[in-house]
Length: 462
Ligand code: ATP
Ligand code: MN
Image (cartoon, rainbow, N blue to C red; front, top):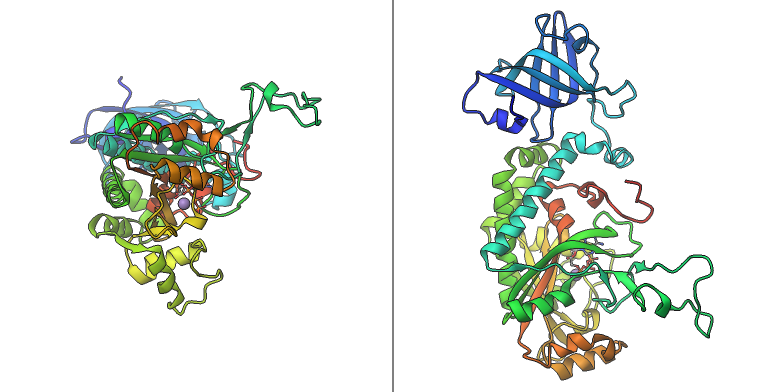
């Protein structure tokens, strides 16, 4: 018999006909002369109810001894379900035990705390919540590719090992093959990177942006979508040490065009995910965040508000709110400011534009006021900053000057500067943290619960 997922089985136009279900038991109920097995194969949120009775082959030898977590194969007939909440069920003619789970199986029918589930990350994809998260991640990934492909972007694979530091700041993971014991040293006794694998210090990338700019200045529109790494020791609910980033980069584009792109992008991805993950999203709305679907719909339907940073500062100063962190020109916005602005003050996504040059990276386009740069952060409710981007400085002298002013060495950026020597054009791009996007969609409070294998300080077991 052909292998049919539960999802496909539930999509059958009508009941009747043979069916095979293979999956793991979420719960088992044994009644008098009948057993109800709730089987999940992960293909959708719903499981398939398998009904077995003494006429079922294996009823006494297999079914009556089954417990949660075991893997089974059930063959039988797909019939209308008299029970509530499910369309069909399988009347089993035969049940086979494929893989037993003993009584010490750690997942039981009751709800488990997310922190506990993190300690059994090898089993938590079998829970409703994590299963739904993984399916939403999948749908969102495809929606992201679909959007960019439709808009004529090329998917560019930027490197994971890099010799350049995109932000001009630390917090990178070192990549080395030098021996721990007695590594080669230079004349001053320091570990000698020239004898390392690449002949110089190398790191895991914090962003594919600099390389994406190479792509944009040849293919006009590119995007990267890959893992990025930050060794920041921040134990927050929205930072991971390893996360996936989506980074479009567009030639002949300014900050206004970039904000338009970000808005079209989020609307398109949210629309697709709502279409493709109806059951999973309904689950998040019921169990995790009662606004999950509503706030996605609001992002889709309402225009984003654009406010210059300078104005944001004055709005925050006049807000009468008792913020923990100070507000003022030249200070970064904290999560509390971001959330108040977008949730309370505007009630819609906000694009904060034109930030003080003093707190932004060297590659951002310097505005005419010589004090701000053409940068933007897109803020959404619940999460705060979801996208950070900028128009890039494409004028060689200004870029060189900023690199020096930030204490960096222009020579180290020779190829990046070359792009400003040979056919430089205005261009812009942004970075979206994929896990922050999933957090927003699902309403999951902690970013560690939207990554299948979260990496954070001290968290690396699975
Ligand atoms: P934040 O201020 O929230 O720490 P950032 O300004 O350092 O973020 P960028 O360098 O602008 O972040 O990165 C672009 C996007 O990547 C952010 O808007 C965010 O969505 C995501 N991001 C950044 N750092 C992390 C992290 N440690 N874990 C998960 N996502 C992140
Ligand atoms: Mn940012």
